[in-house]
Length: 326
Image 1: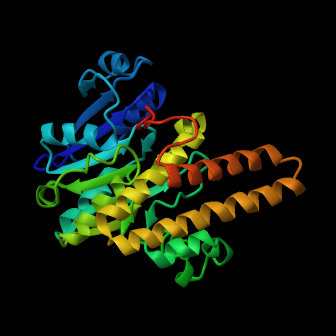
Image 2: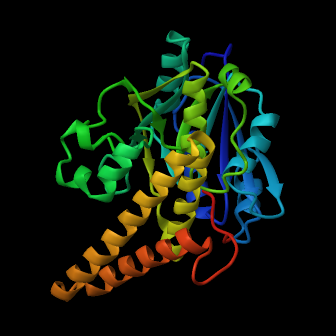
């Protein structure tokens, strides 16, 4: 153990008891040579998540919220109560692998201009997830709308957002680190500020990373640190609602960080993106009988996204859904 430095691990949970249990168990499996302070923020779960923490992990600090306050607000509550020199924000559906936190902290201790680091993230199938992105620009958003980043995945000029031209297996500074796993220097948080609570879900990762770079702190991807992110379970239960939440967050980000003309251009490109997807999926559905139902779902999602872009609400609801923040 390296007792002179501690790390506050914060996990926000909403109705993800089994994932949360596995996440907490993984933190006890030699993931850090530094002392850990573990805080779980439960966003009003009804699946027994909080009771599981109290019963099986008595040393974990538990904060009970009466309702789902969202990812940013729940994390901010715990950050204010934490004491570590570093703050590690981890989704409840993440399994932390051996020495992961040690590698992240060691890198920060050796590079004092780095404010945030993230590990190499694998999916449940063992395949590497793309946990780094570039900041969205009009050009790379346009490339996404025409699927140029998919058609030419190794051409850097077309993949500025997805970074698919890079295998994400080498250490490097990046614009955006996925919010599923961050290790952040407390000194940097004091300068940058907490997460923006106006983002309920999605978008807060782009915003925070943008603000870190804006105040002079570097963000670095550290592939020697590794974790598994199961993810996607909640979105599968309400895919259209989650899709619209993503549209909402992206537009909110653009309004916060870009000029009105840029936002207007982004809006038009997004509409183009959704229209092309709806048309393309409709054509594909005609020729792919075995996967027709999947294409119909994608058509519905794109149409719902267009409806929201022009009306400000989804076809099935008029307010933000109470969705899981994991």
